[in-house]
Amino acid sequence: MEVTIATAVGEFTMEVGVKEPILDIKQKIEQLLGVEVAHQTLAVYGIELVDGLDVEDYPIIFHGAKIDLTVKSTEPLPQPWEKIHVTIKFSTRWMDIELDRTETVKNLKEKIHIIDGTPIKKIILQFSGIEMKEDHRYLSEYGICDQSEITVIHRSTSCVRAEPTCRMVNFMVQTTSCLLNSAVIPLEMKDSTTINELRKVLLDEKILPRDDYFFIHKQRIMQDSCNLRWHGVEDRDFLYVFKGTISRET
Image (cartoon, rainbow, N blue to C red; front, side):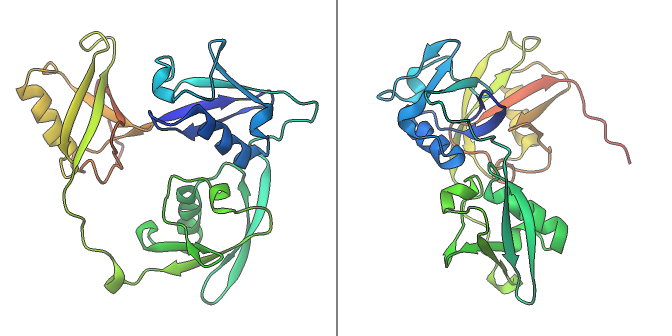
């Protein structure tokens, strides 16, 4: 799930797991901002988060929650949006681009797609000979820093992986106050299930009323014809239901 880390100089978002230790979150912050774990204090609503506990030990930490970061140091806190400059190396050319410290692998692929036109699914990124496979990870987790060189490889059509086999995904559907009084509904479905099929199941089971509503996952509106895998839905993710329809201009 996604939470917001609030510092004295700004805010940035971070993905955390339900069972993730508080200490691991501090280590991620150290990688991103350079603030040593020993100098960090994390708190939610004034309640300090203890290193020996996990996220699930704090019911007040949920998707979209704000975690306050206090630094026990007289040194100035680095700004989370501080820029770094990296070199992107293509097969026949190279270019320098500016990135934020909190950019993820996916963010970088999206920028390369805009610059180069290559479909995101065909972009492979390598740093120091290691493929950066996990899109949700911060660049800093792969050791990317100022003046790093990242190699771009275009995956050929013949190398595109076959569609993965279906797997079961356990996730939560969170309704708004106007739908079943903000209920949280646990579901288990194949990741090949489309949003239309999900909607039909909820209607057939009379879990939701027969009104117009739409789903949001990680702040993105979900497309009815696409499946859970396409939207990147993973175990323990939340899908939010809002009443209404989405009109798209043509």
